[in-house]
Length: 252
Image 1 (cartoon, rainbow, N blue to C red):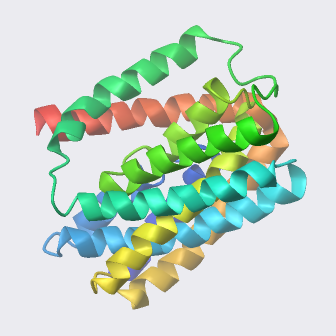
Image 2 (cartoon, rainbow, N blue to C red; image 1 turned 60 degrees about the horizontal axis):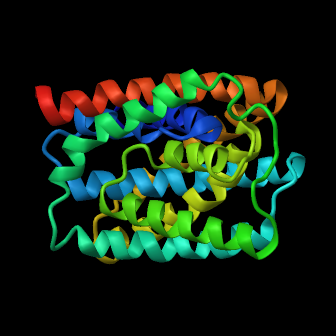
């Protein structure tokens, strides 16, 4: 029964995550509810094990239909991987509590900005090209990758927002590009958790398959309905993240 419940949660998480990120908002609380006495690192390891295949599958699906700037994205993915490894190591010596309290306010600013700029992310007009695009994407990959390894909530949404606001992508191209970088940061965290023995592979592999199914469904929906649809899903997910992180940091 436990495997069925967390697999269903993983399927839904993959669906949401493939569109705009935020799948952990669904899957992590579900695992804590189903396995309340399990070490948190183990649950986070299972989450990464499930998510990495889902984000990879979404990347492949998007790449078939969306023109992705691979020359910029591949180095950026490598930087996201390195950043996530560095962040995961840092969290072993520095507490992330200060981020837990600040995160609702950061997400609130992202949401308000997105709502105020109704044209944000509708047109695909990259602000950089060539080496400048590569440098900007690498910087973003390193910083948000480090955040993913160090703390994590909202990583996919932060990637999408920065691709839109800073790099000038529309929401569809931003979501497609974000999936590649998020796959890299998820992989780094998974490797670290695995080396520490914090992954239940018999759960992670089944949940990964469910996550891929959800991811494929979500990707097809995003490709069908375009940037306007992705924008509204982004607004909904960020709103839910604000509520969840506010509860965790200030109300619990």
